[in-house]
Image 1: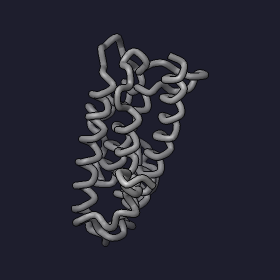
Image 2: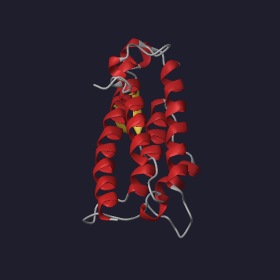
Image 3: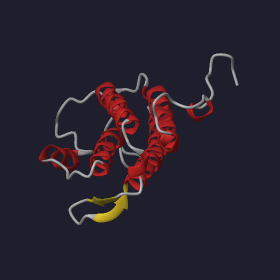
Image 4: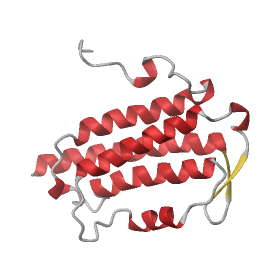
Amino acid sequence: MSATKLPEVWLRGPLNDVPPLLQPVAHALLQAREELNELMTGFPDNLLWEKVAGMASPGFHLQHLTGVLDRLFTYAKGELLSEEQLAYLAAEGKPNGEEIAAASLVDAFNLKIDKIIQQLKTTDESTLTNWRGVGRAQLPSTVIGLYTHSAEHTMRHLGQLIVTVKVLRQDK
């Protein structure tokens, strides 16, 4: 490890004010943010909607990462999605002819992570096993289930984004 590179977030110690049982979720999401920001630095906007081998574009992954975190953390609060959230979901991965900068999608993700960390800080650990319904069908989950899935899902899409971005940057 170089002198300037920090260890992964989970190896830096506990995060202030995040309940102990939610530390792994916060660590994973903050690690994802660091890796995503490093990956997307200088990414050309003209490649944002390019697909590799028919797989999802970087733009989709960036929009989806922000949107899915918003949705999962809404469900964790015991709330249903708003019309705005449903519209965002329907628009994920569709540039719709709009000029969208990669940096603005990264900024939106960063702001969402900040908001989510605040939600984790205010979560009462005694509620972690409380039932939560997911989606219109109100499929069964729990607060901890939603939080854990948010971290896992984020890292899965980050991995896909890493591969797609590296291939696109190599090709162009």
